[in-house]
Length: 196
Image (cartoon, rainbow, N blue to C red):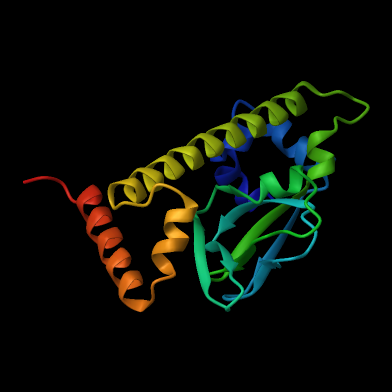
């Protein structure tokens, strides 16, 4: 654990928690570090979500695979970042995403039950940990809503006002799908490219 103390001190989950308290807390929480080879599954899609992950080194991706086997990258996780906390805190029985190592990686795993429930000592730093976790979840929820708003606005600009509009448009065959895809591409490029 001592090898990763500097990255843990920068992790938002441990904000305002001193180094001595951090080391005691990690012991109290039963934190463990696991090494993963490239392409190894850290958390499998469909498995129960019990652990909060913190990337210590390497790179991992949160991915989702659709019915047809198409894989979408939802999040690229960088060292010091927390992942899968929403699913673990919700005690999700079948996690809708997988987390896969994109490089040789070291991950700290925290049992969400130990994080959410204070021990008999009721340590002040544990209360700070729970506050930090709630703040992280709130920030990520806000960002998610902003992404939804952007996508919704783009869809409206190209003439899709509702799910029914999308279904009706896609029901007319490949040409309509190509036309919609082209409009989406053009609108996203317009949004991300600065005006001259």
